[in-house]
Length: 354
Image (tube, rainbow, N blue to C red; front, side):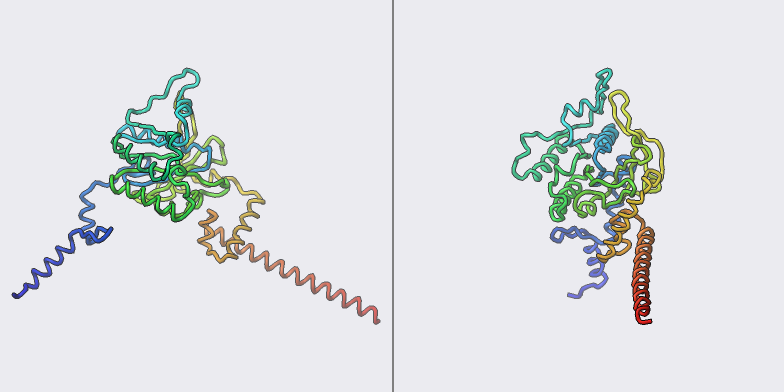
């Protein structure tokens, strides 16, 4: 039987256009991918374009800067339109109540009915496969409460070995699976090691393995202003769904305030992050120069050093030039001093024979 080549080609093209499940992959042509995705609505921002629907997002900061307060503030606003699960592993119910109570009148702050708060039962802390179960129970709670948004405070309770690449990677893949399976939006609160107020916040300030940062869809951080200890600023570090709105040139500046029983971040202005950094002292500069020198000796590029230390590549270049200049100068001084000693010794020796 003779095969019609036109029909054969058409059938092949049509077959290739359809989705094909190959192992763990769903494979489509690029054109089919665009067509199918275009039929679904674009994700909406959940809060100030810092976090979008369907994202696994991360908020991190140093201790005592108010990240839990900011997280509750986000949860409250989102809960005005949809159910939100706040998994609070930081505060007891009494601590939470005291934080959101007017100390003068005893009035409790009213939250939206759509905001659900969960805390870990202390009797469950020693269970076997703890990390696996806590994710499973978060999934169970979200399904039962019909929540599509969850804020988890904090990462340490979800992944004890977040500093280990393999464990961090496996944990993040489990979160991504929940996101893709249910279309959920998840915000993970994390810490940063103690950092200097002279340097801008970078991705390297996120505690744990770098694999964590690579997996997150979006990342933003809270910094402390060196200009005023009451001020905080919020900076975007990673964006996929939208655009960079709050980078180092346009951070969100807030003041923490408690009005009645409501402790929250009050927006003050947009500003450059550099306006809220401390001027480095001579000791800071010496330490930075030493750090650059050590990294150069390890063979790191200017770009890599800039990322590690949270400074610009041009600044690394200036420090490297200064280090080279000082090294050359010290070498010249040493040579001059040696030559000087030799000349003096020669002169004294000649005097003995004159």
